[in-house]
Length: 206
Image (cartoon, rainbow, N blue to C red; front, top):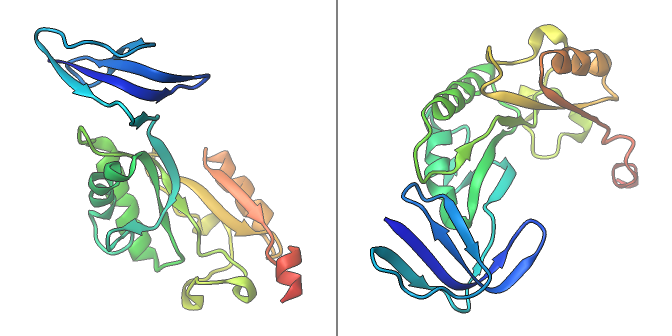
């Protein structure tokens, strides 16, 4: 059944329509955009959204959890988050970790791969993981558990064949071998972000 969302303020990629309408097809996809309120149409589900705002879904690239569900808590955490996030306007997200034992990281990556291979209609899209990583300078670990921190080497980089679960890695470049490890990660199609807490003005001030 066609759905008509009438009279809302529409935020588009290149403009804003103050009182427009969206026509959604049977699959819930946008079939048409009107620059004015639409009247009711036979055989359609019509909603008056006067005073409301319709915006594109948010893509959150750093999600540790929501509503008491933590990414590292259970094997199906990624799927649980995907079910909970749409109510907050999030339509896609990167499950994010803190430093953790290898078994916990593997469990999360397996759960992300399963969720990505079996998407659920109406749930947020599960994007590749954002790993805050175990490879962090212990002197600037913040909330990261020190017992889980390791020196970076290409042999220790986590991953899942096919790149379905892993795409990001943060390594502080004041630690020896960080840049080679980033290069090894990048060569496998992952995005690595070498940063330096020790060189930032805020860290030096402490």
